[in-house]
Image 1 (cartoon, rainbow, N blue to C red):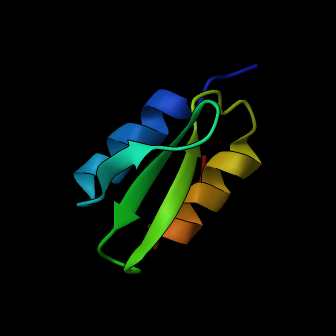
Image 2: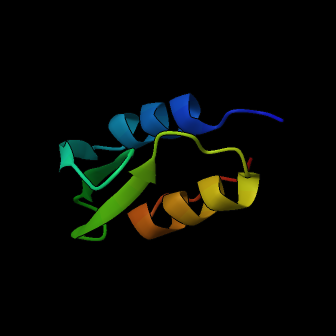
Length: 64
């Protein structure tokens, strides 16, 4: 299985999103200035569908 976590974080940063704080467990909270909302990012993203859902929440059009 592919790990999408690193690519998701890179794409978030490239599109102006930034890390806000640690969340519960192994999750991080990021902020998207595109959608003006917080996004929960897991530290182990193994599903492309989860990665695409995070991108959608951030307002970034990206398919894996």
